[in-house]
Length: 207
Image 1 (cartoon, rainbow, N blue to C red):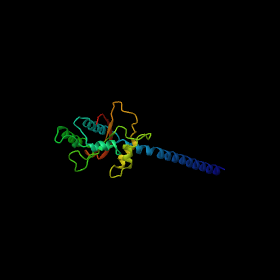
Image 2: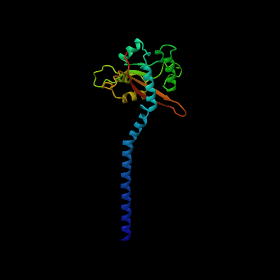
Image 3: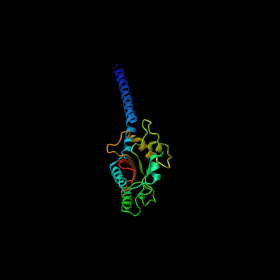
Image 4: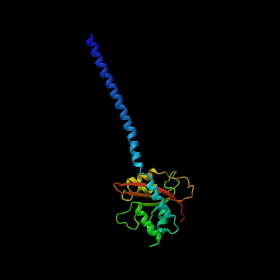
């Protein structure tokens, strides 16, 4: 009789262990499925509008708001036409002017992402767009978001597309009356750092 009782106890312990194991596996599976993607999104978006990037965007904004910064007719048409943006260039200041020199030095010191052979701040990932970058309710036929979404990878990277898609459409007008927005890509390479961040800030300017 004692042997039967002992066997029954062993069977109960085994069943209890199996139930607890299945329960724990179910819990850890649920945690992994639900929270791991959230951690991935956080790690990806921690490089969106970071402090260093916003600092860089602020100084580019100040350059754009300088009265000596003038854009060409082609850039105006690109900004107001189908593309809804133009690329910021230090050469839009007068050649050899103090503003152009300041612009070139800032672009380099702020680690803004430029072509390897760009020494004069003319081919960097600095985009000037309209304040509202999305079509939102469909009342805006063209938008920067639409341009980026439809562009080939050679023009905009997938990470940049994800950042632009992450941003709101900015349907409401700016409190400060800003009509434009500057979006920059910063490539940090100091020390052991080698990563890219994305930032934007509104620009108060008339063209």
